[in-house]
Image 1 (cartoon, one colour):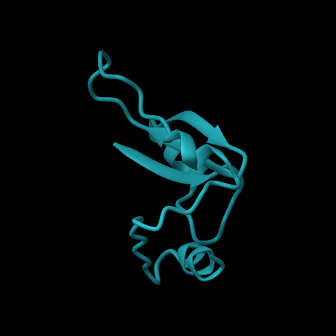
Image 2 (spheres, one colour; image 1 turned 60 degrees about the vertical axis):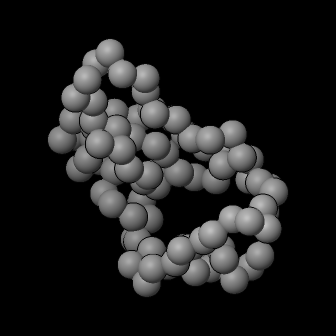
Image 3 (tube, rainbow, N blue to C red; image 1 turned 90 degrees about the vertical axis):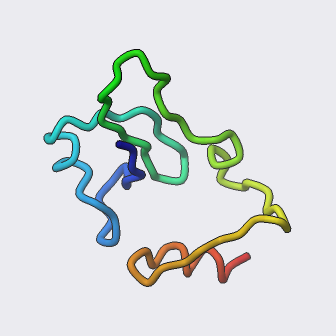
Length: 83
């Protein structure tokens, strides 16, 4: 299982501390303040990681990219309207 959480507490994100207490482990942090965490079931599998464009705060916008926004994730609405 994999999820993206806030490196610090965000009111619209899952509770990072609680997920870590449940057995999730931090796999990667990015400068924009988010972390990729996962719970492994197959210890021989490759650990998940962010794709390279996500790691840059100034990631290029691809005209062919589809962004799906949900009201449950307000940061997506803010981000998509700013680009």
